[in-house]
Image (cartoon, helix red, strand yellow):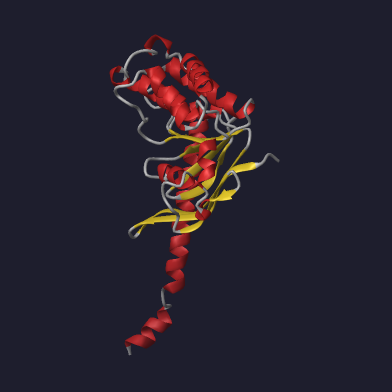
Length: 264
């Protein structure tokens, strides 16, 4: 089995009294694309933030490139790329300058950073806008730019939240091809979250379902109707949760004889 480069083990996270993630286990190995799917509010973005050290778990452990994040080892982040929610952009910089800056911030040498930036701009079909300031870009092209900035330094771990958001069909294909290339050719561990089930079925090696803060199974990407299988998985998880709640209620409810004795 390939090396595990990104892992959450029994991770729990609360916001106030609400349990957003409960005992979540997830692994992403070198050379694979894993898609995290779920309904709105399932906890996908929270889990990605935990895996990137943006949040701390209330319980459990997170490891990146074999390093436990509790130890505060900052050296791993130069080998990680990410895009969470809103793409990072510098309004006064051009498209090329933005990607080049992202490479330089990852300590790439000037010449290597320039070459990598040109390559990414070309692969994402952003050449037409290469010298335009990013404030003039459409939402879809900003998304492409954000993906490019996340992966220009060829990270070993790549975490993207809704990478196909606002993309046109060509952008979707370009991003898909780039992510597959990262995994297959660079042997990176790629984790993406998405609502687009058909697209992740084409892109991912594994599709993990997160529902109400729990990992409740994986989808077979080769299944004919991924959407149908997804909803079956989610409904089965809801039914199991209801049955568990009912069983606990029955366990703590006194029987009729006991209630009768207490009433005397």
